[in-house]
Length: 63
Image (cartoon, rainbow, N blue to C red; front, top):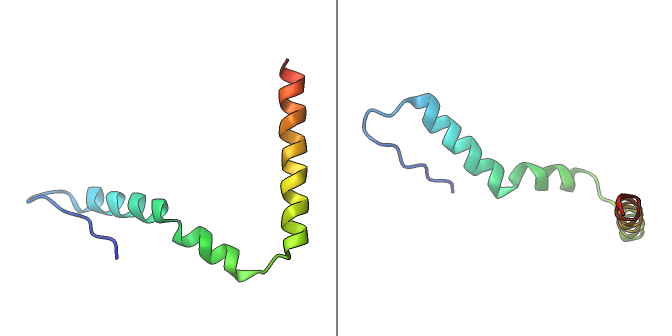
């Protein structure tokens, strides 16, 4: 549960902004989106390898 301490006389918009920031940091929405569609481990590995190759190429091009 997310708890947002509010000072006396604090603006409600500021409190909502604090709540949204804390909610984003927990990663709940990202996890829900990931759980909506299952991806096989072989596809996850393939994507991970493609990303690693891309990053290596970017580093090599910078040098």
